[in-house]
Image 1 (cartoon, rainbow, N blue to C red):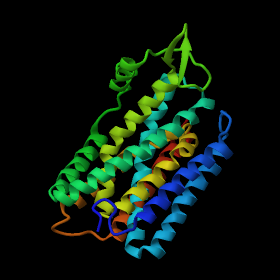
Image 2: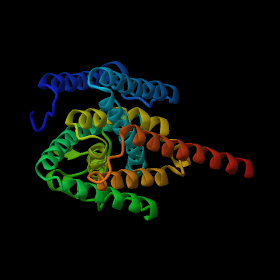
Image 3: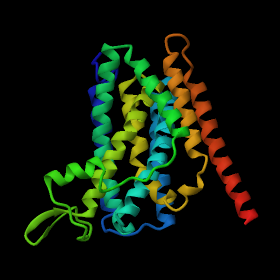
Image 4: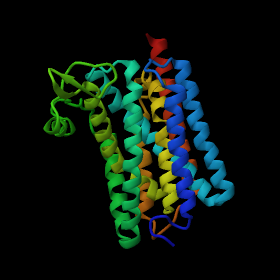
Length: 313
């Protein structure tokens, strides 16, 4: 068995990766050939298509790779999707701080997601290698998740200082940054000098925030499955729909008041699950029920609290 590919053939990996690239290309050609601000209806339809694609692939995994792997894929998909929603808070802040026009935001998100796919693939391969060679690394991952859950639950919100962010400082070392937009271009010449536009600064910040969030999501997926292909495919399928989901939630993400506590509980649970792996192995279907229950409770609780606030006002 190949350490990186797991028990599955290289053909499966190649076909899946080619399919991902094909859908990303079709997304650009058919849905976003021209820069425009997506309507809520368009964002909802596109988000539904990406979710249907992910769940459809889950069905294929369930019937072709086994019921257990199918459950693990769905659990990993839900965990990554829920963590990605939290990432939207930071992306929204970045776009607002840099005043990125809504008609150009999808271009930043597209390349941000493409970079995230490459980054997640590399990190998952490293994670597989570490787990195979150093079993104790699972306890490190579990500790990271428990700490991340605690931090998410009790830390106060802090605004991101765009000008002082390490990723923007790094960008300035390679190319000057202008505060003027040149359409949806990432690089443009001003006075004969090639400069990075606010679009490039936004892209760098989106990639940097995804790297930070990957510190949680990569260990989390290994708490759900040890199969490299399931870890990779569930992660990627969840990330691919992030762009459409952003436009759905951008105007209402502030109403999800119990999302962060819910995510904190999920991180804490899967962290403890990983720490207890050698003592008691919690079945995948049980973990799936717990995660769905936490997300449902957070969503319904947020809706109910928001409805009561509207009645009181």
